[in-house]
Amino acid sequence: MSDPEPTATDWSAAAAALRPDPRPWIDGRRVDVDPGDGFRSENPATGTTVAELPSCGAAEIDTAVRSARTAFEGGAWSQLSPRERGRKVRAFAEQVRSHARELALLDTLEMGMPIANALGDMQEIGGHVEATAEMADKLLDEVIPNDPSAWVLNIREPHGVVGAITPWNFPAYIGISKVMPALAVGNSVVLKPSEIASLSCLRLGELAAAAGIPDGVLNIVPGLGGDAGAALARHMDVDVLTFTGSTATGRRLLEYSGQSNMKRLILECGGKSPQIVFPDVADLDRVAEAIVGGITFNTGQVCVAGSRLLVHRSIADALVSRVVAKARAVEPGDPLQESTAFGPLASRGQFERVRSHVAAATEQGAAMLLDGTPASAGGACFWSPTVFADVTPGMRVAQEEIFGPVLSVMTFDSEDEAVSIANGTIYGLTATVWTADLGRALRLARRISAGAVTIGADPARGRVDATTGAFEPHRQSGLGVEGGLGGLRSFTRLKSVTFKS
Image (cartoon, rainbow, N blue to C red; front, side, top):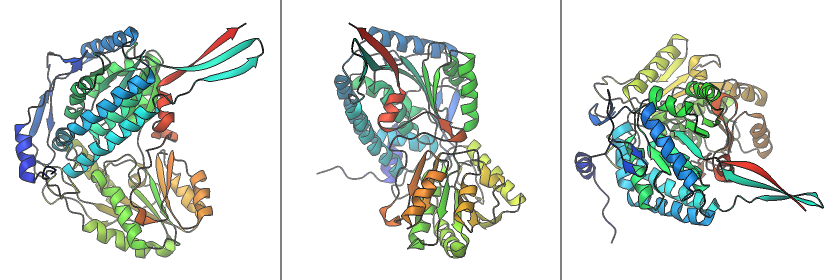
């Protein structure tokens, strides 16, 4: 018989009993460091302190990088066969599953994700890690028939030390998804998690050790972006830096790469993803439900959130009225309740960011159809779904990534106009096209500047994660390939070896 599902009281008791260790994980152990000024992580649902963390900086980053380099050069991990590394990566997936409730609870407490969603993340990422393990020995080298008297081999080898800087919106999930592909092909890693939500990522060090990953191969250092993050990005002995976060920070990392050792960058940055709806869709209620789900999942704090609704003028009134009704029914709740699907924004800073964008939209003439402004925020950071109509493409609300549950509605009359509006931002992360016309779907998939395009002809099929395969952002949404075999290749470099007879 399986254990009963925990109640909110059980989760609250588990939260009270938690004693998270905020110290960095370096060279296979927790390390005592001078906390300096330190920083706090806060529960955005209550405003209370979750933990006090040390503000690590250049010294701790340098120690972690040296540990990673030593481990890489020692070969205990980098020289393992891909199949053996894959076995240990699968063992790590089992560790994540065994500690899923703990990891999920830490994310819920630090950034407000509803506990049911956080648990779902941990179950899903376990499967992704196993898939990564299965691909570890599938990066095949090539023999090039260059000349009858010579063989040329193209072989792939790990870069060496990979730095990873991860965001707060899916702390453990993105932390694991950054670390495991880099490890699977033989690199060592130094991970700097977001200061808003660091604790679940810090816990990954012990789980990696329990899975048999050698000391020094994975190092995790908490700290502020301007200190620890900048030190990692500028470090002369980091070969690759992988980052998920804002476009503004991505630009800064490009500068740091040039200022240091020209390290390779893999950047997944901002998005302003369009959802384009044509009048041939069969069921507007289901489309509306999917659109609301896309902007309210994780309280809209998702880089691929469909924050721009582009709808054909002929069905605009009918679809938008359904969207507003369904969005109005979405109510925030206690993130520790299993039934809660919509929690708070992750921090006071994010709350103020959303407030600023909503005020700007009103000032610029957008019509607020649904006002999500809280009556009294107190110490919490709840913000309900907000819908604007009469949005023009040049407005801030249509151009800038808000990272909150704010939907901008625009209309179009033709396919060309829809493409023009969709491509009319600096971003190019994802897009969704709702149509039953296969020819139109394929045309738009080619014409829209986005790394991943979902054709949503059948809303009954539910939400699809467009990033599970390999994809590469367009424009200022980033650069480099993540996901699938292509993502694994990103953490390797090509070498040519010539044999002459």
